[in-house]
Length: 404
Ligand code: HEC
Ligand code: HEC
Image (cartoon, rainbow, N blue to C red):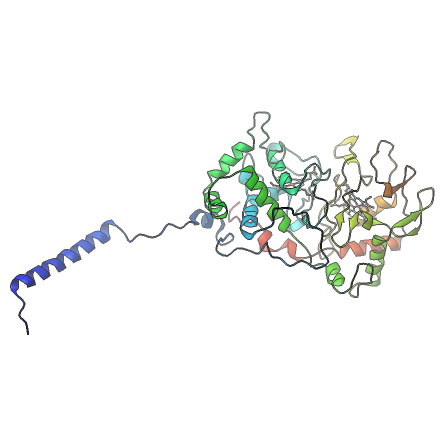
């Protein structure tokens, strides 16, 4: 065996000691580096509710093959952007004093409308019209939004409540800051830094990005699990009797679909109730050419407004159990479907209403459908089949914040 010289042995021993000592010393001063979590702030705010490595499905949801109307133009839904839209929709930071979000007035449990007649915004502000349900907003030919269609498209619509003095409050008037101030505010929020970086590659918060992502989230809210859909999937067209419907529901469907015929006194003599002329199955979206339906009031005023010519899809007026979600019409003046049908049964003749749809009048006189009690029951039974169940509970449309 080769003999190791005492010199070499000492050298070896010394280097081992130096190595151990330096390792110890290293351990004490520089802990092994942990890579920084790029989603630390996101996890803190949302836990696992927002997870950019495991996104919810917004982009590839299944829709029935009979649904064709779609107002998406260039802003196709992606999971990443719709998820950011969800965060924005529920974030009270979008309001001037951090108290109100879109969801304060558009509540998932009520088909994204509000149970209040008018909704509360910042600093005691109140909306002038009843909040709208946000169900199947995408699946419509009408591209304009709001009861009076003042938003040219959904993208434009989404930042209008932010700049509304009574709603989210960044109005730029009466000493209040405008939307630029909100954009700066959001760009300082750590979870937006992380999420914008992931979605856009940089942390810039712009109005165009808010519009793009909020519109994607709203367009993603879809509801096709109703009794109506189960029946419609079994037949070739809406006029065929649905095998899963009761006789009453099928009769109500016929009344809804069939136009009425009137005599010279605007009284129905034959035909149905003609609802489908404006609320078109199978989307139940509003006919873009609809004028007003005779509901011309202004909440809290005796004046009238005649330019409310849009309604959201008639789906989910009621929940699957048949209970009505919220008050109906821009005036919120009906709490029941019977009340609504009562209006169409006897359209008021208001001389100042020069924008009443021609389908609802004959020679200037408001129509009288003369529906029997049975026919009213049938129509109500049919409208109740348009309520789904999933949209009220699906987590991907729910509040993602752990605290807020
Ligand atoms: C203070 C209550 C309030 C807040 C906050 C609010 N909304 Fe609304 N929203 C309403 C009311 C009321 C209407 C109907 C107003 C009208 O037509 O004049 C409406 C209408 C809409 C519509 C039109 C739906 C349709 O079918 O035409 C959309 C979309 C919408 N809101 C989305 C949003 C988004 C997105 C936000 C958040 C950026 C938001 N809302 C914040 C009360 C509110
Ligand atoms: C001429 C077109 C037209 C016809 C026909 C029509 N509607 Fe409407 N409907 C509208 C318009 C426009 C609105 C929005 C009214 C408003 O609030 O200003 C509306 C609103 C509604 C609403 C309230 C929706 C909501 O979200 O609050 C219900 C419910 C409704 N209609 C049911 C019916 C029924 C049932 C029939 C048939 C008896 C019918 N409509 C016939 C145009 C029409």
